[in-house]
Amino acid sequence: MNKKIQGIIIGGVVVAALGGTLAFLELTGGAKDSSSAEDTSSAVVASEAEPDPVPIITTEEDNIVSVAVQNETGGYTLERPESGKTALNIKELTGLNQSTVMKQGIIKDLAKLEAYKLVEENASDLGKYGLAEPNTVFKVNFKDGTSRTFKVGDKATKNRYRYVCEEGRSEVYMILESVLSDMIERKEDFVMTSLIPASTATEDTPYGRLTVNRKDLDYEMAFEDLKDDSQALISSQVMVEPIYAHLNIQISSKVTHGLWGLAAARCEKIFPDGDDMKSYGLDDPFAVVYYKNETEEYTLKIGKEIHSTDSNGEDLDEIAAYYCYVEGVSGADCIWQIDAANLPWATYTAGDVISLMTTNKIFDINEVKVTYKGEVSDYTLDGSEEETKVYWVKKNGQDVDVSKFQDLYKYILYFPTKDIYFDEIKGDPFLTIDISRKDGGGDKVEFFEDTSRRVLVKLNGRPSYKLESRWTDVFVENMERLDRGEELKEIP
Image (cartoon, rainbow, N blue to C red; front, side, top):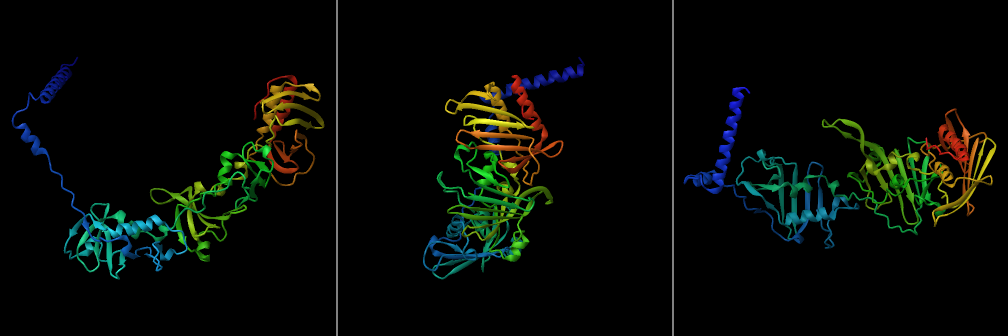
């Protein structure tokens, strides 16, 4: 080993050993001399004591009859009704749903207004505190007819505070910004952002009808209750326009029930006029959601989009929110900013929310008749949902492997429903699947050739889907595999 390196290592060990010995002696008191206590005490720095709060207004809340605020956004007047009732109202927001908590909070804070400390007793230069020409001034009017006016200046050296002085006086105080924030901000922030209440419907209440119209879609989406409860495998609602389809409840519930409990992120504009509606894209909205049942009726208009921004304030591709307007809600005559995450109607298409093409349970059916290029395969069966068992299956009178037929039926259930189609379909089907239930119901699915790789589908006589031809190719192949007792292919 290099002698220099060896020396460094040995020296390090000695120092470490000495350090350990010294630490042990300090813990046991063996190495302290008489001066160590003085050294320790002299190292302690006394913390500066917090100043006592300085009372500015001390009164009962009922003694404050109004607060008039002037700020950069125009201000507002918070007042008690002349009738003597205790309810508070912001005059400029009369008719809109207002936050009771915020209004009461202002009165409570002002009735016991206090400063963190007095900054300067006889300030000759209010400008250095932002108080010569303040952006915010508020006047507190009392029951005895007197009033006091205060000016709000810059942020103080302690960022949680603002400089404040009373009109006509030269004392400058530091007051918590949280106490003053509602007087600095917009009056629109007092408007309640809860728009549509939670649903009070019970299981016996009919759903009604919800429609969605969008500029980027050439069809209307409409949703209603499922008429046949026996088919309600997934959702109690179905799509009825542009096609009839069952729904994927994990996604569709946001569309069918997303209006209830809808809330905005921000009130953008109160009492909008025609020019405002045009400016925010609500005179000719991008999307309109309309809902009506026996007791409720709402219209949600979705206007211009609001993009997320980067650290430089530049717009990103991501849409963060939309400007919206809601009809059918009292006290909500405003243009709102609503988060895009709460507006599935702006992005979801029909193919996104639908699920199974057919929801006939295998235990409820007694026949599946398949016609392929003129050849009929007639599957008959019997089963019990209570026992969750299919007893037997026959094809054209001959026994068929029950388990493999169940795989074939599962293949039908997992028909790909993403691409909808509702234009006219001409010609004759090359493949038909006719499903009959024991109660007389069922579904008829017809397949029509479109191109070499695409197939068009009618469900119960109505154009409904388009899909890749490999689905029908594998289905026909699986029927042949079933005849031979072979394992079936999975869904392509």
